[in-house]
Amino acid sequence: MTRPDWLGRLEALDIVPRGDPEPLAGGDIAEVWRLTTAHGALVVKRDAAETLAAEADGLRALRRAGSSLIVPEVVALDDDLLIMEALDSAPRGRRSEAQLGEGLRELHGVTGAYHGWSSDNRCGPTPQRNTPCADGRVFQREQRLLPLGEACAERGLLDAASLDALGSVARRLEEWLPDAPPSLVHGDLWSGNVLHTGRGPAIIDPAVYYHYPEVDLAMLTLFGAPGGAFFEAYWDAGEPGDWPRRRTLFQLYPLLNHLLLFGGGYRSAVTRGIAELA
Image (cartoon, rainbow, N blue to C red; front, side, top):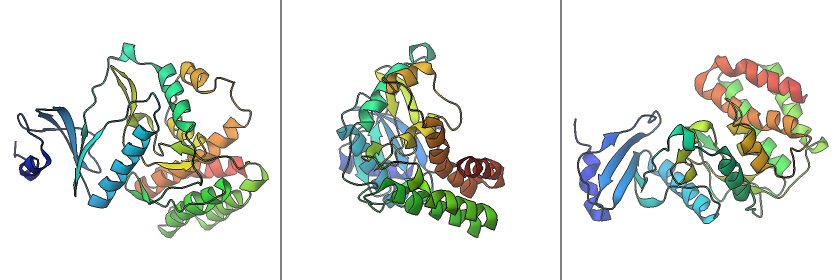
């Protein structure tokens, strides 16, 4: 195996490798390796410097939140290299969905002064606009639904009628969705960004901002769903009556992102969600 050219940069970061790095699966967007060092196992990710700076910012914010969820520590950020703590998966029988639900509820208990974030970041490879906004309905409309809908339409992935219907849904949010204190959200919480470790559930690869907490729940249930123990722990007071409608709304943004990234196979899911909210 060819040794990566970045290995020589680690000495200046006080990182002493032991052996060669091991490429990891799942590096479709960035290059990712696991590296054994004198200070333990690390993950090294290589990508655009701006992208990695935003990811490091998100990881640090999630760690500061103080929830029981495990978040890998950022060890170093050096231009196009992000170096962080490696996490090891636990056997399937030791996974706790109840702990995941409790930890996510704790995370969402951290609130901010506005919807959005202090800087833009990315959801996967897609630039994610986080311009702060006092009203969550306005943020969802102007920073999430309409920009992604228009981007899909520009590429011929969404027809004019569907774009108009999406705009109608977005303009009518104030009719049924109450404003709420913005919660700290992971922002891209699909199942692949949840790890079950020997120390408990962990979350990785964030796209953080402040918004409705259902953002994370909707993403977590988009391609499958955690079991009842998760929801019992998360909704200790019982499931809200409008959760199905909120789930449909907050799944529109990731579905539009998938349509933009992967093409027409997601068009029917997008138009179906728009129709359900119309």
